[in-house]
Image (cartoon, rainbow, N blue to C red; front, side):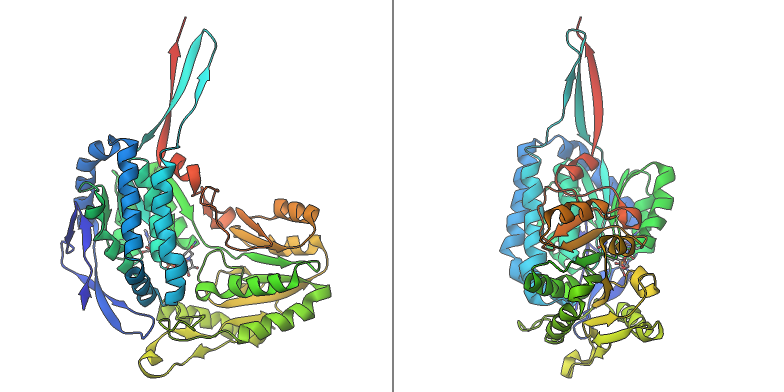
Length: 481
Ligand code: TXE
């Protein structure tokens, strides 16, 4: 039974109170490792290590920091297969997805910020002969980075890479539901060349050790990805402490399909944007709006292709959908499936748990589910389910679909399928979202601003946005004459 440890001050150590939690694999439902049940004492230990390391790390040259981040990127790539298998075992996603998406993106995240920092500059403002202003963008200190279970190493590294590149030290907490790949990566940190105390990784529950990170007065920056409710709880603590906050929260993303779309592409991509990672991506399009002229044709093709998806062993290369992340999350998703017919919907595909054979019988498997006939403002169409469940709804005009698409408390991403350029621009502009994809989905350029509006969060990650977040601007004005 693997026992995960915290990385504090360059050492892999048990939590001070030596308390551990069970870690289950969703593939079989069995406990397969133990994780530290850390608390504020472990955070205090990490803070003192990070304080010691900050003057060293923040004074490293940009080239030196770049070299270390890039080396960690290479070490992750060298361990890609093992990390992908570990990610699949911990999260339930197919190994094929972890090896194609999750781990390669963690490699890219460290490589991207290892190079971006070399191009990150600031401004100067000349006042002629009177004065010269220049802006310093300086590292702030210790960044608290808290990440979720759906894309574990992908989102964990997406936070810590810019924080480190900018010269901050980091105290990072992965989700207690999927701690494994952050732990495996922590074994590569010393080899990459990080001085002790620069990157500290602490494991444990959100309300206990997550909250201790948010509450600690010497951690002035908090970067969080997770549920909207948790984001609100974190804000209540961090705001009166005037901490810098970046919140990437939930989504209920519209996928809008106009009758002039490239039909085959729209159908095939909609299957992916509905059910990839078992629908556990904050960018999934969980509300599919189809213009009425093609509604029946699209519905038939979408349902048929969804029924062809294979729900199976995450370690089988033929599997399209693996297990959802936990029993409690499976129950939450099933509760929405059971609600569908009560709320006047019709289940066109799926709607049930999948019972696999043998050792997989205890795993958490669900059918990809499509529901039609629900009101746009019902519970299923307003709340984030975060599982393999989508609704389909016909619409007549652009005004109709914009009203429905913008009707939720979320505003993370949206997808629009149309060959009409003017409409693409107008609809994209009118949608409440931080990210709009037109005739594609999840096509990512790491330089672009990433994040949402309304209940989907505050601030942006990505590109120089993240480096601006993890540095403090200071304007210096020098009198000349
Ligand atoms: O998120 P949580 P979970 C949504 C999705 C999902 C819901 C809950 O709807 O069902 O969020 O998922 C830590 N102080 N998304 O359980 O609880 C926790 O330990 C400090 C969307 O993953 O928000 C974990 O490390 N930290 C999201 C992290 O916060 C706390 C992706 C996320 O946990 C804490 C995942 C607290 N009080 C879920 N409580 C997206 N936008 O991608 C928890 N944590």
